Image (tube, rainbow, N blue to C red):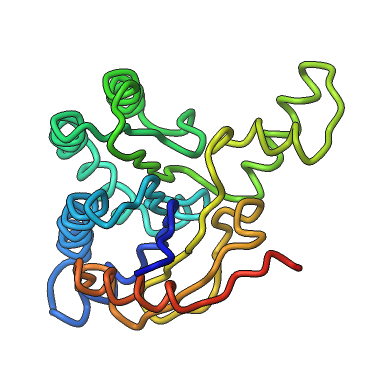
Length: 225
């Protein structure tokens, strides 16, 4: 491939439908999605991806049935430390995009510990979007600028986003068959390429990612020119 994306973002959609399709509890669908993510994170550096951003839990996901939200919180509690240890061992820098204030204190503390522990890692940046919404991120960015008494413009807004200082995504992938952004990276996606697949997230394999990257390599990007 001649053209390779430095920054790939993924809307990981389809865990619940995968669970229904396989006649298992929805919690099992989220567990399967977690293992699918582990495989993608493992292979991404070998595909020369420098930044991988994944949509894990949106600001709107709190509105789901309470038992589903509790299951997700339980999974996060169970797997965070394991994830951080593996990322650190593989020289991956872990970051969170989104507002951690709404999470239980024990989860927020573990996430911040992981951010600090892996801050110096160089192989790849993994951004995990948690309690994240694109509109909320833009509003928070504007409020940061106003609190500093600075002028709101493109550069200041961009630098105060959760992804401030990072390259915008070259490619945004959505699994699960829907063709929408769902409030994900609204500012950063201005000139991203989009690829949608019907594959449900738990069934998304490194081979699916490699196929999508080959399609990306054939596209001509003009950035409005």
